[in-house]
Amino acid sequence: MDGAEQISSLAIDVDSAPLKNIRLQAIPSVVITGSVGTEETPAVSSVRLRRKDGLIPALTADIQNGTFLFPIVPAGEYSLSFPANPQAYVASVSIGNKVFDGDTFQTVGQPLTELQIHVGRPALSLHGLVEQSQSQTSKADVVAISEQTGTIYHVTTDSQRRFAIAGLSPGNYHVFAWPVSTNAPYRVPSYLMKNKDKATEVDLSTSSAASDLLLSTTE
Image 1 (cartoon, rainbow, N blue to C red):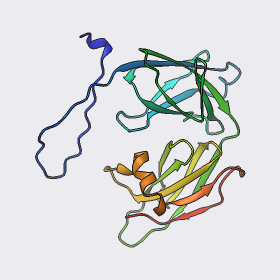
Image 2 (cartoon, rainbow, N blue to C red):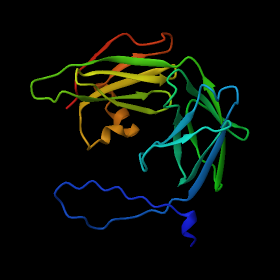
Image 3 (cartoon, rainbow, N blue to C red):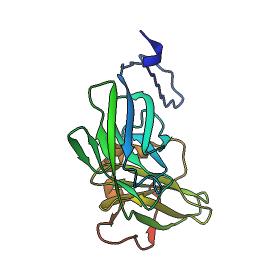
Image 4 (spheres, one colour):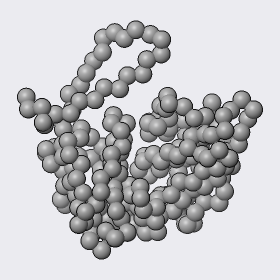
């Protein structure tokens, strides 16, 4: 086995209990490369890659001469965004003749996945305030999930509990607020959609920015 072609990842959440019978699963590794139209490059300087199941941390690559590279990542479903360019969003992703609407794509069954990113403008935004109870800290986590793609956006409020999420594509979003915590199952799409009745639903299909949202934390 050539170690240069393999990647391993193990995330374990332990809560005062011994670990027994850990089962590991081998996942093929791929190289993800791609391009953005050269006319877009001056306004889009980097691209972020986020695996939908949270198996690995989000990765960011610079866009140089219209191209980018993510070497050796686990095969699977990913979403893309432009973290340094809040006025743009990923409108669609092409792999060969296959087009994925939105910012989400599935790696192909080959060691190399080559993407073509199509940029949308203008990007939309959410902003607002999280209410504070006497038992809570000065900050809160705010998470928005796209109903169309399942992509998750996460920010921590400032000390006044205000927040802003930029770089969003048009569509419907479910917005949650939680006390700041390192134990974050709510960053997994399946968990959020299962609990979407606890969220604030926002329609960003027509407006350039949502009016001030007032959120309450979900315990």
